Length: 166
Image (cartoon, rainbow, N blue to C red):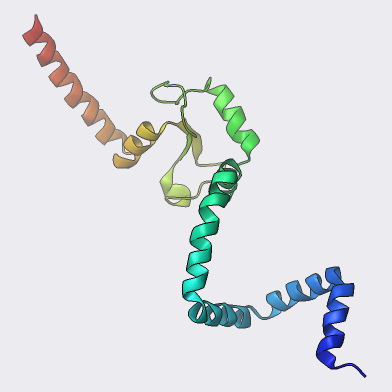
């Protein structure tokens, strides 16, 4: 008679799909055990895991950069790549504020009061911005009065500069 562990190994090899489903169900039923095992494993193998991650993830990121960006965008803003492409086409491939053509991945502009700083929904998404315009709006905290004050300020010194030049 075979030892129980050998029988289990053989069963797992013969039934990989059923084993995969059993593992999934176990993880769902016992998240605390999984978390505890992960913490223990990390504590026991911290150095080798860190070295492995440092070697693996830069290569993975380089090979899958666009896929990773799309996944993050989807998780944060609940948008698909098709939505981004459609919005980019609507804006003629340019920033909604400065009209500069996008050189890098556009930023999804949204009202922060609705869903917070990072996430957004259909109700609060506004358009696509370049990095500079997105940061500018963020620094002004989307406050229209502050933006109007900034325009007044810039126009005042612009007029003075034009008066001095003439």
